Amino acid sequence: MAGNAAREVIAGLEVIRALAAGPAPLAGARAAGRQHEMDVKLILARKQHKAGTRTPAAPGEPPAMITGDLLRSVEAVAYQVDAGVAVALISPDIVYAVIQEYGGKIDAINFPQLGNPLRGWFGESVRIPARPYMALALAEALASGALAQAAERAFTVTLGF
Image (cartoon, rainbow, N blue to C red; front, side, top):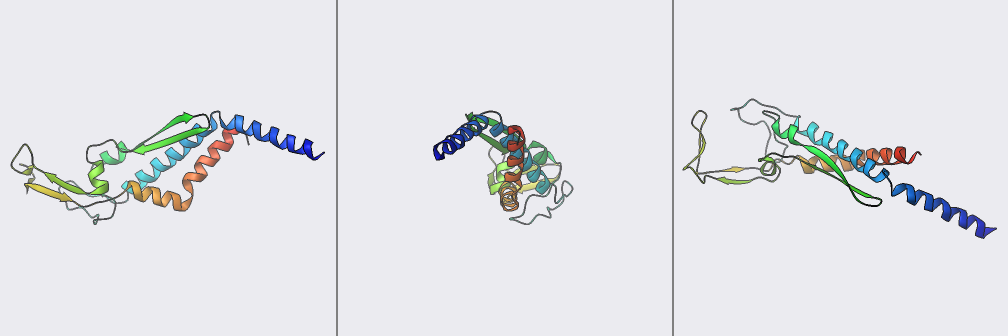
């Protein structure tokens, strides 16, 4: 009798494993990716200022939005890696995204100074302080459980549970 119960449990687990090797992992990764993309964009929209004005974002805070180009460049893409395994990649696709996140020094290379003749010159180099937004969005999403909830909801709906 106990052997039959064990066989039933094993058979049930095999069904779940077969279902999980289907579209559910990719659905979960897509949902988590969309959630994280939205979280990043909300962080980038928290502060704004006009071009040519001093940023209200202190070093260590997310950058303040001027044009919205950084916000619009953030995109989530999900991939099926293997049976039962999928990942979501969320990233901005704009040239200054990395220096905003981590900070750094920009040196003039092709011209004697950095700047713009209409707005003024900065000198031979400029140091940009780190204004993290990707890491902050991930920390906030992990702390709230939003990524796990989005992935779990999509995963179980796709499985039909």
